[in-house]
Image (cartoon, rainbow, N blue to C red):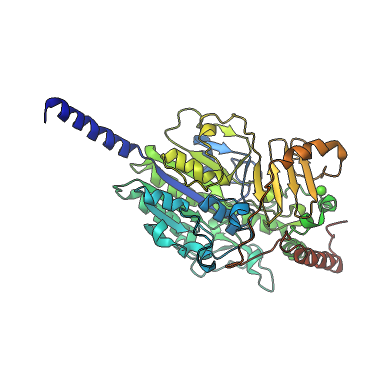
Length: 496
Ligand SMILES: [Ca+2]
Ligand SMILES: [Ca+2]
């Protein structure tokens, strides 16, 4: 071998080493049911989220981000597979393990597998997919996977709201347990330990926090960081009255009835804020572990919540709607290699469907051709770059909502519509869809609606609680029944 060849060989080795060294790690923080009640989105004046606020300031804070579907299972399936519900047929909730063999074969490469196949070490913690799906194709996606549950939590009787008879879903109170009894603390601890290890290969670490998903039970310290009065969000009493029936039936009023009856909204909202505050503590634990590790300068951090949450707006105490409270999500991306956009806000409409292609792009990986969405890399470099495509959220086959900076347009399976001028009406109180002055606006939105819809996947279905093209009546009937209950209970009915 002559000197030139040796020189080329050395250059080649150095190049391949530096390419290897440059492959970024990914830390994906997945939060459950967190709406904009966090400092960096300003949705509630009493929110306390210093750690996430710090991350938002460091990276790009997407303030107009929307989930692909307003329920844990369809939202996470879309994000992890990179496929819109109208392409996958996964509209309602599923247990992926129970879907007929072959149905999902065309989705060869869920997000963790993309990284694992390209030589990454992948680790998933607790809720990344919707819970029952944590064992779905585990070996091909995760090198390491651990699900943490809560220990038995001892609720503090004199604090918070303990509805009787006990209703697990709407309880909001602190527990006296030590931190190690809380699943989210254990997930944060595991993630921190993972980050302290020596990794020979780049890693993809996904850590899922369950709070602020109901029930709102958190350490006492977090509850005590808040004091009454807790400010109520802006609510219009008859807000549902100008909404078509499929939309009204999305209002989860059956959960709201006991809260209203027991005059418990203040405790519930305090429980939600305290749950978010505990999640913020846990996010802080993981971020500090990363900062103290050798990976800080080469790890992309992405933080999202699977959808938002209503706390009384439009008579809802839940998600499962196509309104802002349920579709809008926190969404932050920090790439330490990004020299231009970090520290800025992006108020262009984006969807969590873009997560797959964005992470693939940032890591230099080729996504499969069936993957939906687009890479947000250009918006990381220039957050004020206009986004032409609206962010779309799907809830049941035939029900779609589209968000731009200025508008929200919704069309339900039966052709009924909602239209809100966000710039004047951020709470979406006045539905303009019936006003012919806006026909042109509505028409412009039509071109973004799906022209073809995959049939709903029939096997493996679990919770299916929406009136849609496949089941147009059932939810509406139960909604009407609950409106009657309001009246009988002497509560302010939602349509008065
Ligand atoms: Ca969720
Ligand atoms: Ca209204």
